[in-house]
Length: 91
Image 1 (tube, rainbow, N blue to C red):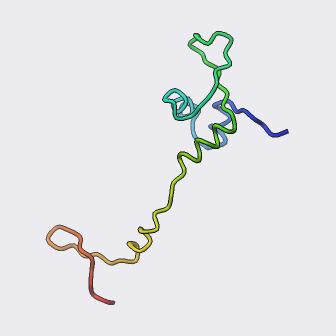
Image 2: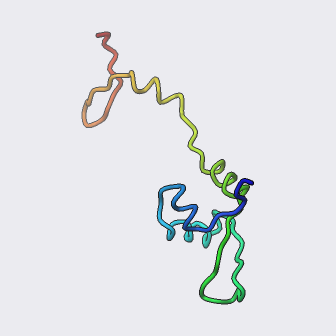
Image 3: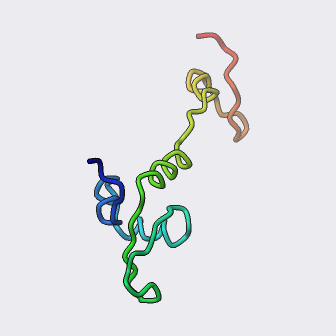
C-alpha cells in the first residue's frame, strides 16, 4: 500500500530541504497539512501532509520554461554607452 501522508521531516528528507522550511511552508499556508496533536492549542503541533496536497504544492510551484529565452541565448549583445544593445553584425 502506498503511503498517503508524510510528516514534515519525511517530506523534508524527500525534497532534500530542512524540516524547518517545511514547517514554514505550512505556517504561511503555502503547504496544506493537518494537525493531529492531541491538544491542537499546544505549542507542539504534529503535522501530517497528504500526498494530494504535496502534489498540488508541486504543481503550483512548478517552474515553466520561457521559450523566448532560448533565442536570447543565441543573441550577441555589446555594451554601448553603458547599456547593452543587440549586436547586428553577422559573424
